[in-house]
Length: 71
Ligand SMILES: [Zn+2]
Ligand SMILES: [Zn+2]
Image 1 (cartoon, rainbow, N blue to C red):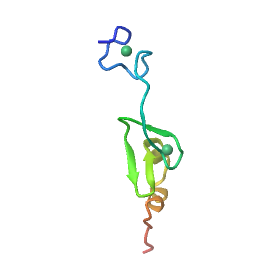
Image 2 (cartoon, protein in one colour; image 1 turned 180 degrees about the vertical axis):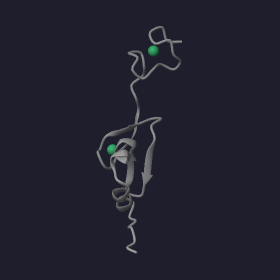
Image 3 (tube, rainbow, N blue to C red; image 1 turned 30 degrees about the horizontal axis):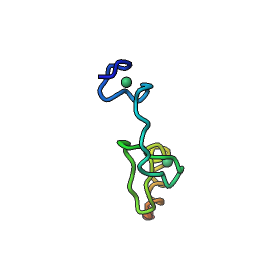
Image 4 (cartoon, rainbow, N blue to C red; image 1 turned 30 degrees about the vertical axis):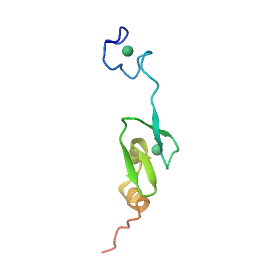
């Protein structure tokens, strides 16, 4: 167990915590998506959770190539 944060593995904010590993790059904001983070694996590329929460449903549908039908 870590002697600074008393957690196993370390709390992400602990100075002893390992550097997060960037496994993907968000295709929308170009930010790194860290190992263990959730993201959308879209046809256009990965989208980070932060971008997803910023998108409206309409934006999201357009992004994945779907359109709302007009009734
Ligand atoms: Zn720690
Ligand atoms: Zn993003």
